[in-house]
Image (cartoon, rainbow, N blue to C red):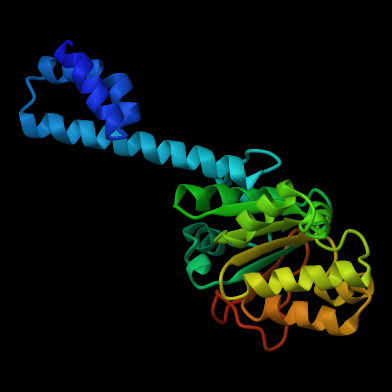
Length: 254
């Protein structure tokens, strides 16, 4: 067996699969550059690390199930009077995920809520976090079928293991008591283990009407808003009394 073929097989056995496919080019590049043994070794290791990181990001992007791919760089901040550049960059830094803060993005259809949520989710994946995106309607269906379908079990396991969970179109439809109870248990599972982004065109004060059960509504709100920033997109913003904030004492209007 030729040395280059032996090298490929050894790399495969060591699970350096991406490097094994490209080892010939890496060797040629080292010869052209007259690289030292140390430099060549660093190039090989760096190449494998880069490939693994790219594959991991690709896998996590697939698991996140975003409805579209729009980054924060494509988000038009100039259209959002309720969000300053300073606050936008503070959100982009994602330190609030480590602090287990939630974001509640409120506003009418087309205000950019989902784009901002997806953009933050994509940024989080590139920074090494596990992210799940799901619409409220799909969430309720998945929760209701979790005990009977493997697909729903897998989806819910990934959601519960995520660092950031994005729930889109919260409260676009009424829940019955069983659905509200299932949703409460999910929020309770995520409390103190993950950050949540919620998009909705209805304020939290209106959610009770759609959940039907005041006690469940209060319990869900208590966990969601304990550590949360509420951002009204394309609307005047206000703070909820006695709520902690990641923006200190400044208003989200400033």
